[in-house]
Length: 123
Image 1 (tube, rainbow, N blue to C red):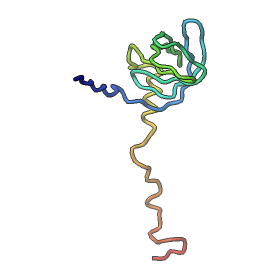
Image 2 (tube, rainbow, N blue to C red; image 1 turned 30 degrees about the horizontal axis):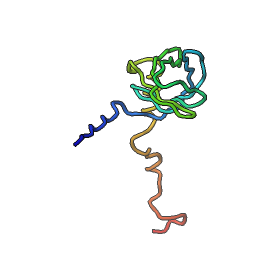
Image 3 (cartoon, rainbow, N blue to C red; image 1 turned 120 degrees about the horizontal axis):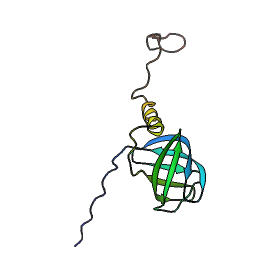
């Protein structure tokens, strides 16, 4: 009888972003776009494809972030950061992206709304 160990849930919440970055692999330096970001890793789409388990650098806003390729597909790859994002331009972009979604719909002009029904004011 075998027991299956359940996978641990992700340690960090992923956030959808759209950030143009430069990825520096061992042999090449190419542009890509981060579409999914957390403190522990990122998903990069575009012409960037590096071998699994290879190391690379992500350049964004004057900051260099080191990463390890965890998975690849035809047009995207997943990266893990060996050192969590805690500051710098990439972390600030993540923080801004998380703050852009309000928790509730805005109640704009609620006090100016007429109390009647329809265009003709039927009650």
